[in-house]
Length: 138
Image 1 (tube, rainbow, N blue to C red):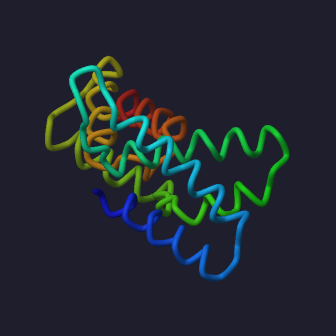
Image 2: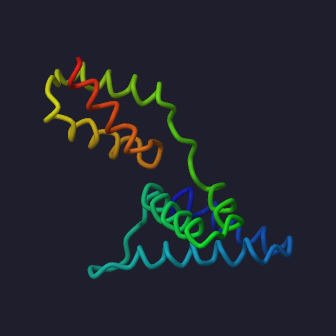
Image 3: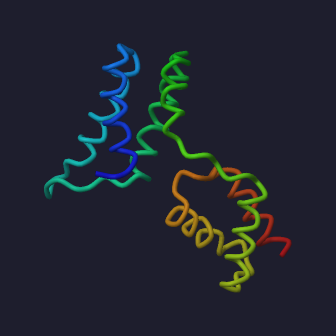
């Protein structure tokens, strides 16, 4: 079990003790989605925190789409804090310098680095704009 999966399981118990049925029921849905992701055609796998974050992000999007702000608020508690524009820019600059990247066609390498090393901690659209600018202007 990953840290985030454990936190969700513990928070279900806490919500039950507190009589918070809305939070309990929502977290049970999240837990069910995690359990579904664990089941593959080759057997059970461990779902990493980055995958749990993706599940929660999707659920937040759905909640907001259906104007369910209370669910979105609860789910946001499980989202890691996002990198600032400055943090993304500095990390992207450093990665570009270390790897001598000098053309916009290398943008995928920067995006891949963030996806692997900082999953769920950045806004991909904003990072894409930052990276494009860095690789175009140097």
